[in-house]
Length: 50
Image (tube, rainbow, N blue to C red; front, side, top):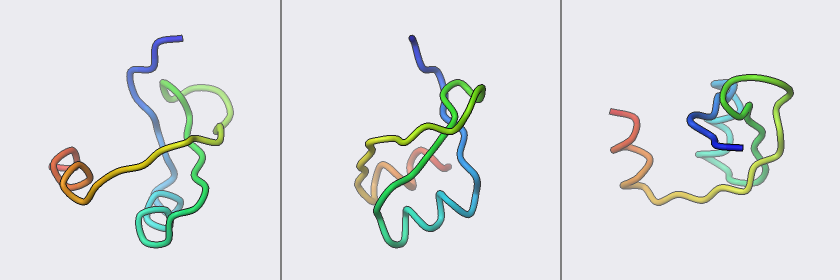
């Protein structure tokens, strides 16, 4: 499957950014939220959000 975008609940994303741990998201915005294995750096978070 080619993933073009991932959708998150705002609260879940904020919690993950602050505390880490598990996060779930919908691949391509459809279906049930799936457990994702993600990591990021501060620069990648803010550059992609702008």
